[in-house]
Length: 235
Ligand SMILES: [Zn+2]
Image (cartoon, helix red, strand yellow):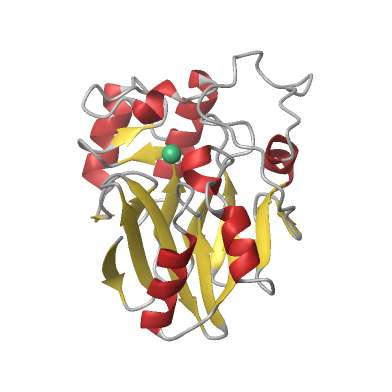
């Protein structure tokens, strides 16, 4: 597992060269964002031990297998950790893949894994988890969320953007790294989310796949233009 200290309170973990998770440091311990593919649990715990703080909560951006693959393993290793995901995504995680009547009837794509762990905390737009503010970011999946670190404006975007093979919005399939686009549920929703996230003017862009990009405004503008989307001004 590759461990990259992005800044003192943000560590990027990478496996298989393209699957990321993040450790966000808080006064009372670490928040783990996503759990990577299966078999990553002990490596994630070792990375937290090297930082010297316990993982006290696990937040999932969405339910695809490369993000929840080690959730059950981690729940065994960290029985006291709070497990959190969005209210909408919790149904998908529990194996209910039905779309809601008010959702676009696009096909759910990507790898889904039934997990035994159940979230002990359900999140919705605007909620706070430590220093992280929850931003609803549907499109890649129906209940996908992004997280803004309110201390410095870093956006942990999950698969609403990717940075591998260049910054790309979740509404466009990047030919240099098509996996994220191929796993997308609904393109118009993903485009609207990318525009909304761009309007937050993040100071850094941390994604599920690829390196953390500092000062990403220009790269995000280009990504939106490539997807034919205009940036939404922050409300
Ligand atoms: Zn992913």
